[in-house]
Image (cartoon, rainbow over all chains, first blue to last red; front, side, top):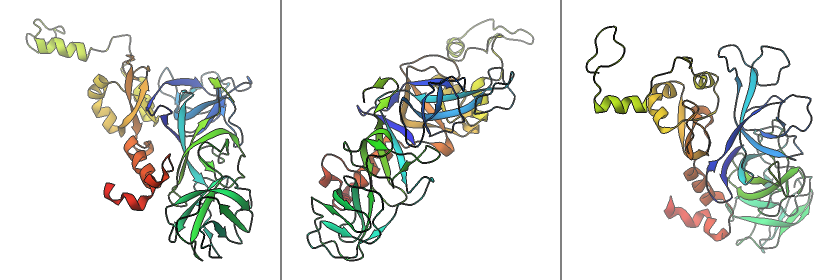
Length: 241
Length: 132
């Protein structure tokens, strides 16, 4: 996950270096540490909460101002240990880009749904294995078939049965055409759930589930290289939600 | 440097080039340790370093050695250079080679091919073959 640009289209970010209260890795989401248990200012977000989001870790290292010595990327109450340093872009209007993954584990390919009933009107995708969670108001796109590369907003979703789009795909949805469907729609989706390491987006959860985020854009390629761009709805410096 | 001989650490005569060089690359003060903390960060694979233009030239060997590359677009606004601590309005960001973020060109290409934006028909990838 990365801060890729800002709402005004620029790519200039203001960065701040913070002390940490948790073990962090580059590319993960971090929030303000309200409690004083960790002795730092930043801590891990959770998979389902982005309250007081500060940003995404641009870089992290064990920082020893005196030079030398092994470092740690978590806080330590031991005298003489090095101090964790985390660099984060703190702009509240930053747009973050996260790889979509199928489930809590990172790097899992999204489910490919194979259509089982032809739809001449181009509005219905039918399959016995449409995802369990409610993806109504999400977005589906065609992976193979006459509509390949095209996407539509889902307006009716029935788990393990079918989903319907209001704006038809331009060509017939044939049997064995394949699709992917995710719970994200630009401007519409207000939540995003993170993967276990907090570096990717879990695209299998029900629409509207997860931490406070607003979807900005979707990059719908294949099942393992599609991205969601989002903004924090509850940024620590701009709590507007 | 002209006008120097053994054991004389200070030049006798300064050419314009010497003056320019001393301005651009001032010697390390005795209060500053020879191993900079930026060097330590590079050693620890700190992902993003802010490097001003002068320091990018001065420390080019180290940056190359530790495989840091400048992102074409992403810049730090109002941050200090990690080497010389000079603050500029915009400072380029150098990333570890293995963890580079995408450039704007990469994002635009990706968006043109697969993205959803205000005019979806513009993003039908089959109609945009001529742009590739």
